[in-house]
Image 1 (cartoon, rainbow over the protein chains, first blue to last red):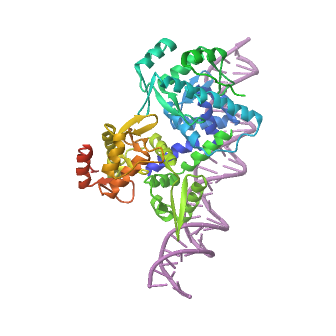
Image 2: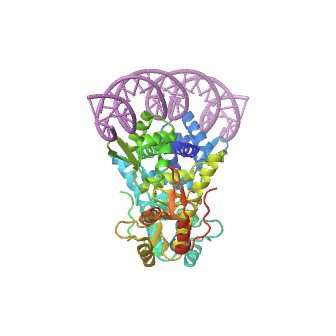
Image 3: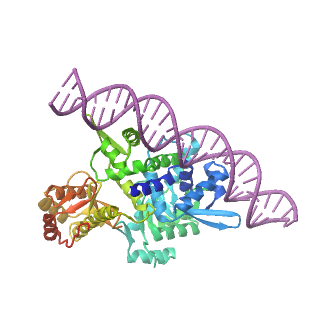
Length: 230
Length: 230
DNA sequence: GCGACACTTCGGCGCGGCCCGAACCGTCGC
DNA sequence: GCGACGGTTCGGGCCGCGCCGAAGTGTCGC
């Protein structure tokens, strides 16, 4: 019976619309302040404080106090994956009605971050391109080939060593296909942002591929025809 | 915001200890009657009825009425996987204290069903043995090799054709390793039960490997030293 | 120091969920 | 038919949770 209690306690963390909104916002992998989350979810300060306490106690979030700010972020990739899984299995709601919602959805489908790596059509396209030479599908994830290691080192300036798993697969919420996560995915995403091949749109998870980025993706990976959101 | 609502609504289904207990019980892949579930979870009839209605409406369970009985089972492998994921990520409770709980846990760790296929040390051992010849680790699951297809046909008397995915990987809750799910895993489990290589222990998910089973596993797959629960 | 600000604690309100007992409805066995 | 039985519906009690406004604490900028 205690097993069921534990499962229920974990599920309860995500079973409130406000806490779920926090989680989805934090899926961009960044640390948000309590106030930002409160405004994002449309609740008052005290309400956000209570939720954050509960989520930190449950180990779903970690906090980092700095001056008068309280930053929180997802506790790790396992949590991000759990959120993504729940998100993918959630009953499909009615399609978006307002223009604002439609364009936001389209932007997310085109390109976004999934915790700390690339997702959406962009993420899947990049992963597919890498799979031809640098990645091997493997038990429960990807393995980076020696050629892939060299590619990351030369083209991305990232040496993939040490901590495991270096590559993890993540099922995409909109595409329903796997894309690259893990340390390699995070490094890729960080490099793309650093070189301004992609830029964040607004405050959410959506990304926009820059002109430089389109050129680079075509030359480096042969990825074509990435359309932005309408 | 509607995204968060959907995620929360799905999580809420699992956020009650009684419903969670139902889900864990149903993880044996069989159909249970409302009364069985009520007794198992220690609640009264009306309470179980209410929960089952809610879970069926949410699409987590499917029901099948037969005479004065109402049978329910998990709606599909996706739901089973979601439950298994939540179960794996749940905060580790205090270790079992009573002798009864310890032996029950040990039995589950040794061998059990995971929805409709084999799990625990038995499931992992069988999967490992098959991986040497009959299975290939692959993107998001396993692929059955031609040799594997022949093996299933000749040794198990099962022709794996048609519906996909024929093989799926499932992360084990106790072993933290992948094991064989999908149609192939289900066929394997069904054959093992049919030939009485394994038998169900009590009413739960636990399995016991029979003497016949030990012999067969050693001869067929070279799997040794499967110990039963204490 | 002294406001402005981010966050927290406290108290209280109201909704919704979980649970049960009692009564009701269909099915099964005789 | 007529009990026994599985399941359901109804009604009501209860507790927990989510929410906020007001007041308090610590930090930053001047």
